[in-house]
Length: 544
Ligand SMILES: Cc1cc2nc3c(=O)[nH]c(=O)nc-3n(C[C@H](O)[C@H](O)[C@H](O)COP(=O)(O)OP(=O)(O)OC[C@H]3O[C@@H](n4cnc5c(N)ncnc54)[C@H](O)[C@@H]3O)c2cc1C
Figure 1 (tube, rainbow, N blue to C red):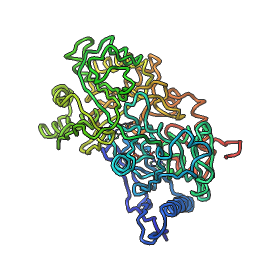
Figure 2 (cartoon, rainbow, N blue to C red):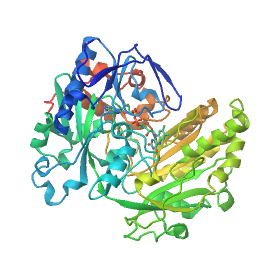
Figure 3 (spheres, helix red, strand yellow):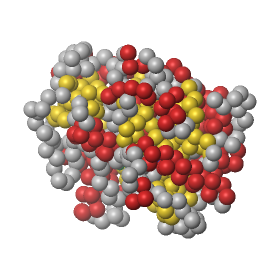
Figure 4 (cartoon, rainbow, N blue to C red):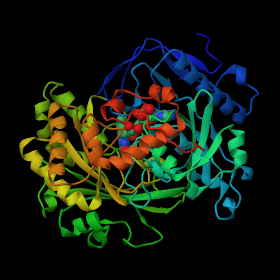
């Protein structure tokens, strides 16, 4: 096959994800590797290179159609389920790392009257969160920062928001909330720039420069925002950024009591003020991040010694003279979330017993949980210094569900009940996140909380997850399973329980709106078919 400059064959016949949760067979050497550092492109402006990349993505789609190749774009490949793979060919987007600071003419008329151009970046899809943090915090003048992050930061920007990656930004939300425009290639002859009609940021001039047809439509934008690679290839995104700031965090083990439930259910931090770095309603140092970790093997209501680990971060103005976080070279660090903690646990088990002794894990979790939290109880850093990369070792289990935060106390009871008979080989984390407007967003409640089960990838944890979902359904508690974590349990029935048929049909119709049936078929995969999201639903109105 003759590849255009900037596209190479990706010579693989299978893909295994970083945590070894699945193996996907692929057609031999049919995958695509995208490049931007091509000598033939020397002398081209960054915009010209970007536009060449768009043409290459269209070429990939044409080739896939001609060869009947099932296709999917991949980011960092961090997802723990098969959302990011196809049955035949995948596209490596990770070298697509152009970054643009837009000039005035690229903004919609009047937008800059009350917004600043420096508060946006147009980013190519393969930029990782690490890379963006470095660019914004250390290279940009003036220094800027992302408003949100996951607990680790190796995801690509598009891979991250496409599965609703989130941290615990209680007043901001997850990665989808910082996305203001999406440039998507969804056919060999068409590509669109999509933004919300209710939040227009860019001008027609900008759309013309990237050669895209502009669509301003809330329903379409909200549908594509969390669409796990199924709406075509997202080439670039407009991201809102802000002035560089610091996060000041404090960690404490505190009793699980009514005061903590007031925080969980109502966001009322007054009862745990003693454990915060600043008063709860201090407008100059607002609470940015709130998360809990619970070890189900060492937990009792109202008992500080068996309480919850609470981590709260305040957002404070940037200053240069703060003590830098001293990262140990090994073990659990401030950047790690509970998943990182479980990695430490697994390392210790492997070192002590070898891999066959996984039945010892609950006991090990118990003894190591406190050790893992043995660290200074306060730290300060930028968002890029606070949420860092994770080193992969071993087969980890990580599943998560979005919940209405008012249901969290009942969900904790469900976990403890299930744990009586099915011991979780791991721990529970609860991260509180402001809701999203994404149609299939997992943080779909105004005040959402994501319950995570992190541990070893053993059968008992899969059983635990299954039983937990059954129990939540028995109590009619709504949940939404994370698209990027272990999610084999999503099927058509559960999807309907999670979102309701009207929402699902709306999402499907928006998907079919921007793709012809034969192109849409390219982006269906086993995962989509398993939950009945693959169907073509004709969209009767004009596309744009
Ligand atoms: C160590 C670790 C820590 C994690 N921490 C968190 C956390 O704190 N919070 C959280 O919510 N999740 C977390 N996750 C899950 C992770 O954030 C998601 O799985 C995320 O989607 C991974 O991003 P990625 O770049 O690796 O994307 P991939 O896994 O490669 O892809 C994710 C989806 O995006 C699609 N996609 C990627 N690029 C494009 C493109 N250019 N165009 C169209 N579609 C595209 C893919 O097709 C796929 O469906 C973690 C995972 C790991 C392994």
